Image (cartoon, rainbow, N blue to C red; front, side, top):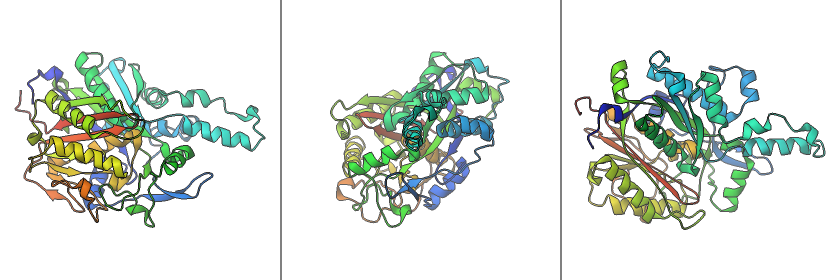
Length: 418
């Protein structure tokens, strides 16, 4: 790791999440280690049923039912996760100023759910727009989920959403890290949110592309790297981290989940949909360079792999190129448990791996019955956890449509390292 002063070292001190199989980190980790998936099937407007990941959490714990009704599903998830993250970090705004707190939320898309619902509603009234809700505009602006969080918590610092397709969670985490290092804010709430399961359009589009997963057992529909994989399981979810500079975290005496030491983003500049392993490899290499690490220093790679044929293969090519000759690097995939949470994917998947620094286990990729030869990586942890002596580093990959790539490196926090 590169030497930095404490006021430039950025640490994760709180995690709040809502996943398709858990509503807190301890439960999430338990389900991942046990290989438990709670993917179900849902009815889709104009379509039949499809596998999907649905979150169950205390929706009225931090704001009233009336407020949830006026806001959005994404805002509801965001408010829950943000409050949980602050509580987990023990932050009550006695040390931090709300005007110096930033909220950065990654989104794959936003507004389609509300628009689809309104069009459907007015179809019942012969498309009379008098029945169109006046709440539509504030619900559909891209900064809505971040803004709903600030209103709930009285945060008056900057808030905005980061649009980066399915790399958005990682992108927001990078944004929060950079803003802290620049001194623009003193505390960052950052992560990603997905409300995609309420959008008919995204299911229809993936099906039209031949990329919507199908299986008689929905819990087995998400199966990255498996030879029989046939597409993506769409999920909702959210995860928000509290990020602090190390000097402030030390002052508070708070427990630290990990330290963000490297990150990178780049672009394929090739295709609207098809991924490109060469650029993904370059992205990982740049993150390693910025962290001052070699490939052999990485203990866990959490893959982006979504269960699409070419997507999984391209990422495996990239990993094979960068991490050849790294027998102590282990590879897993969280989407096999929870599906693809789009804008929340990167941060949810990172959160699920953070406890590895404590329990020294690599959670498994489940539903991996027959490994695709083109995805053959020696370090894949399949179907049961891998116990290690020590986990020092996690590299988290997230890639998205229109050729956007991201990689974030988190290291075990060492209080003796200066």
